[in-house]
Length: 383
Image (cartoon, rainbow, N blue to C red; front, side, top):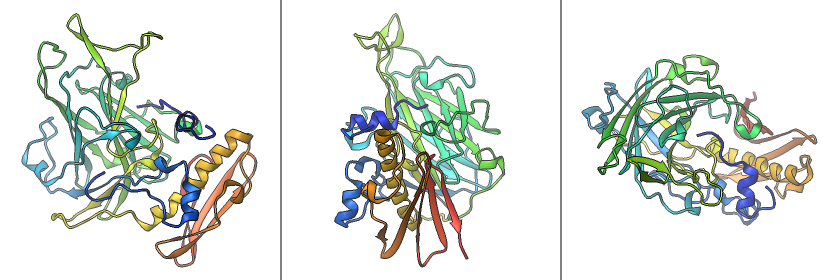
């Protein structure tokens, strides 16, 4: 769904001054050194370990008909149950949600299983705001840059809302709603009856085939290969309702008369009520292995990047207090170097009052990663 809470609001709500899958253990994604821990203090929920999923290559594409029980899907594993968008800050969802994925040379295939005792949906026109209904949402960043990413929403009548985001809303980005995922195929099957309050449903399932050519930055057809790594997350929007005159009606706040806020349940916890923090999404590792012998581990480069995001979050805190960016890492309480997997990394900040860029590298590798004030990650290769 679109931005529901800004970083400023989130950090105020957590008391700051301003503002998991069997593959990975859910622990803080921060080093053991006390100085490093101090640097992350107060931001722990933005540095929990994202989920990871190893997606298998399939020789036969699944039929996109909403039925997720066919033989093709049996080779894919279900994710753990979805959690609240804020992770451990909130109770676990009352209703179960899981997804599984496959890929071939043309598409990423996604199946979702959404338990719900009252399946309802009213929005029927393409590119209407689907998350005003209960829905299922997909967020994809193929290049892992935090920019140029895609969002696809679907409700229980298979209405699609697809959009492209050049950069997140927090960086004054605007959604391109006119973008369509060309070649997208989707289907829904309801385990019960739609918009019928007289019975109790099991829920609904949805299948999607997303062509790779539709979700590549620059709109170039770039097919992933064995070992490719994307960022991806999934969200389920669920409203509290009551039955009135034979319809599911959203509950309202007694004081304001407005609809109560929706529940946001996700695959990989964001740590903030905002799906548009792409750096918080899970990891999708493409594999051509038929056996379950590939285990996802956080890559070294991703462990480097967490220090860039540390500087980013601290700079946003600083800017909110002072209306300008800090000029040095020392002002932010951050060291200029850290050991990551036994490699010493240099962290460097260049800043003006209204812009900054932070970089990290080590002496062994030829790639320097940079991050700017808009949240754009870029690799720079040196000879």
